[in-house]
Length: 106
Length: 157
Length: 257
Image 1 (cartoon, each protein chain N blue to C red):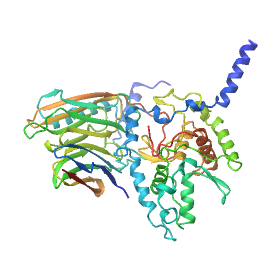
Image 2 (image 1 turned 45 degrees about the vertical axis):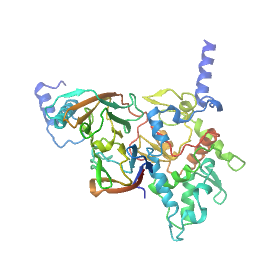
Image 3 (image 1 turned 90 degrees about the horizontal axis):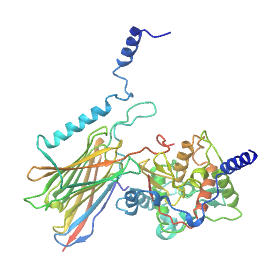
Image 4 (image 1 turned 120 degrees about the horizontal axis):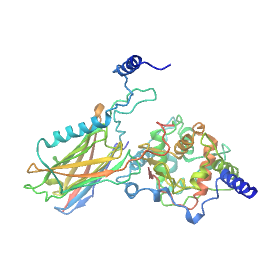
């Protein structure tokens, strides 16, 4: 099942700034909502996102309950060399998702 | 029968007592959230000065739905090793929690930019703060008008 | 005095029916009434949360399921060919059951009868994923439900339901969506209510949902009794809505406020 989807241009010129868009499927339960009978629904969110480029971290995000459900994270990175972009999401209750995307740089 | 002053005081005191009244709205909510925002701001910048500029925070002025508001931040910066943005923070003053998101980045990002979708509890001012490599702080704010949906329903009907 | 009474009575009469239909050329998708920012979310598959469900549906399409251990692909092949145009002509008449089925019910029927699997729960992630995937194959195609001797009775039932006042607020669908579209209702813009984008990612739900779920919200909103999921009256209403939107392009999966 698609836990997350990443959109990365498959190739780029060396030094070019490429746009990356990521979507993760997650309700991002804030911890402030209540059930019909008044009980608090516990917080359950993605709290971290990390992008590494051939193993080197290039972008990191700390998410809070104010981030909308099915979080979108869009950013840029410099196409330095061919290789693999790895995207990791971590959240409450042991949530962890990893996606990879190849990038060809000429 | 008119309530005597004594009876009134006893009445109000007894309703103010239960600390476990969980679903009641905090009468000091606005003040508390403003204070939380100030505390979060202090946590991010410490005692440093924050200059308005270089940061462009974009939010739609009138949103379709407060559950999901597109937000983007762009900071003017050459993004070189010597001069780049190393962190971007977004804060609110009326949400239950002041922190929205924090980004750690560097020259590898190419552009100091970030976009996501956020939840906004009420019409308010949103603040974006950028920390540059020389540990200076820059900021921008945006006003958003948030209205409730016309036909509210709770959960899956 | 008598003239004034007649005029007032005439107004009330027309108000009861909810006015006339929107002229075909004046029909607008709910897309056009959204902010530019929300439109952009829908336009880009990379930012449209519906994409997550479409991808799930694509995976489910090829997954063997049920006692028959069959996948959708085993019978229907590549959905990009076989499902093209399908969502645009649903709800459709099912000869075996002798009744109208909407797309979700049709998918569920296959799941139960052909895959020999237990029924999908209404609004379940799997059913919505399959609906999203199937509907996606009709994106850009004109809505074209088949109206003939078999489906006409359902169309008329749906038309009546659309024009019937109901609930504590005593409103008909037509009064808002034919007579007052484009105007504001407590901060929200009233759309014409064309089902061009279902299943939609609704920002209010922060989730993907079916047309039926949306209709239930509306009915609840006017404080009328909400029928059970799968109620025949809703399917008939869906047919009327699709007929009312005939020719308009499918946008699935759309994003709506």
